Amino acid sequence: MTQEQFSKYSFLLDRTARKVKQYAQQKFNQGDFDVTVDQWLVLKNLSENGLVSQTELAQLVFKDHPTLTRIIDILCKKGYVERVPHPQDRRSFQLHLTNEGVAKVRELKPQITKIREKAWENLDERDFEEFRRILNTIYDNLEGNNAQEL
Image (cartoon, rainbow, N blue to C red; front, side, top):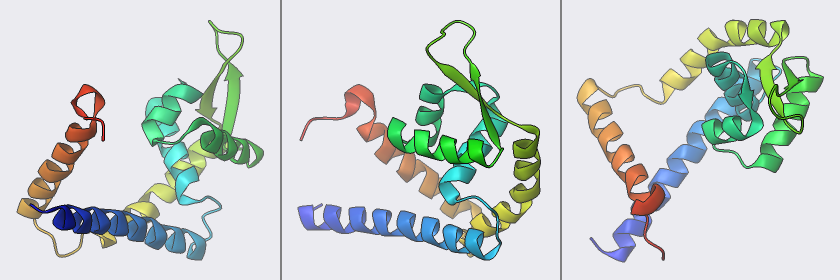
């Protein structure tokens, strides 16, 4: 495969990921969800993982620490997330959903599932399997020690 073909596929992957996020954010705004797509990602991961440190959450949602701190600050102000002192490390906090946060996740989950399904229309099980295989291969190529320096 030529360098130009690699470039085109990388562009398609990036373009599609951006379109999925833009579409979702547009629907979030229209639905008056009171959260952004990135805030939802944090809420969803906290609902699935319970008490986690900010470092653990950053790894789960693929956000850098400054960006995640801003998101968490906003969610705390909205009353959806709470910081609690870490039991073994006085310098850090653990994060968890408040009762309002749990209710928000419960309220939004069905609506967000419908939004996400739009991108997958007209694809069959074989398409999903091949897509998963390709994306996992790309991810594995870049993960940890397998990634070669440019």
